[in-house]
Amino acid sequence: RHQLYSSQSAEVAPGVWTRALGLSRPEGGDSSTANTGIFFAVWKKVIEGREYAHFDWTVKVDLDAVFFPDRLRSLLEDHGESAYVSNCRFGMHGPIEVFSHRAVDVLAADFARSAKQDRPERCARELRFGLWGEDKFLDQCLSKVHGLEGVVDPRLLCEPACECPDWFWCTNGTDRVAYHPFKREDMFKQCVANALQLSSLATGVPAVAAE
Image 1 (cartoon, rainbow, N blue to C red):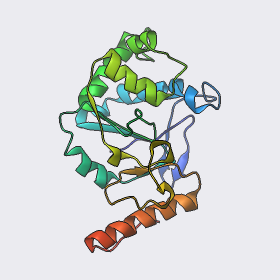
Image 2: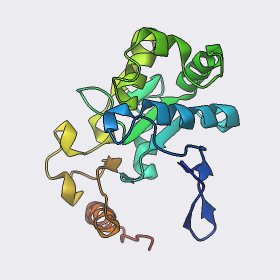
Image 3: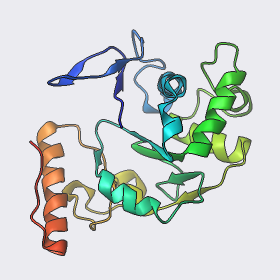
């Protein structure tokens, strides 16, 4: 099951609509390191909907990340006891974030502590809220404030910001779960095609990419 979120509701494919966050403009301006407030609005929606409660894992993926869910399923078989899976040895990066049911429950409880239930209260008080991006803030929130233990798995993400060579070609092994960033549709599709072709060569199964 998946949900799509944007500041205002939009049809991104025939019959596929995003859920509106009700934000008239991005909070924090254009800086990618000032996006924490935007993602608080996303997590508030996720927590209120409670759909996460029916699943073992919740995954947040940015729209410019190429994501292969089947590869994630295989990766998570190695991390059944982890509270969350980080994707970089320098700290969790935002293009893909993977949280256990337990981790989202902890986050939900912290949201419930705030007056408007619109932010993780303990983490917002004890950490550098507003100075870090959402990824670093959430990583520190879960590990430092709430004492949850995550695990780093570099198979989760290939991007230039975390020492993944030749990320642009999307051929860094058949187990990479996500590639980032791809801002253009043609480049996004080429990444998908390259990754599936590599998998086809490795398995002998013909590659099929959706249009």
